[in-house]
Amino acid sequence: MTKHILIVDDEPRMRRFVRMNLELEDLRVSEASDGLEAIRKVREEMPDLVVLDVEMPNLDGFETLAEIRRASPVPVIILTVRGEEDERIKGLDLGADDYVTKPFSARELVSRINAVLRRVQLSSPVERTSRIDVDERLSVDFDRREVLINGEPVKMRPTEYRLLHYFLQNPGRMLSHEQLLSNVWGPEYVDDNQLLRLYVTYLRQKIEPDPSNPRYIFNERGVGYRFMDFKR
Image (tube, helix red, strand yellow):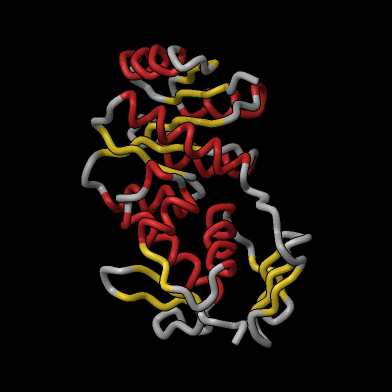
């Protein structure tokens, strides 16, 4: 089925540019010129993905994203200004699935949209076992898609879960940045080491007893990451 993309930007020229290029890819597009209209359209139209500009008057992109997340799990790509790392991190913290920095090419945006839509479709990977007990503290119940710390479920973003799942499939192996980015995010992301570092940090904060002294996820500078070999 044709995917429905909602573009949220207060600049008509930007909306027209994005709409034209997405429609060339046979995507169905609707528009919102501000955050309030975006929240209403998310509820009424149930788009497959939202492209959301951060810099908007009145209700900015972050406030809009927070409201969208209260109403819907719809994937969101935020548009940020190049070099504004704090904006990207804040957007990911609020639940954005990805970001694209301005100025961007239509090809880059379409590639990111397709990658996020693929991740959503693959968010329930086929499991080889119904449960893994990493140690006495950390377990993953794949049937329920639950990560458990001392028996208590820990809330995970879909991408965090996919990253942990890939680590668990490869215990004790040194996984390169390129391997992780390609398998968890998609081949379009193989150079985005910053995105990988952010999500490893998020994952450590949720599963490590002491994130500054990792017990599960180890890194080798310039090479990649390794998850503890719990199968030994």
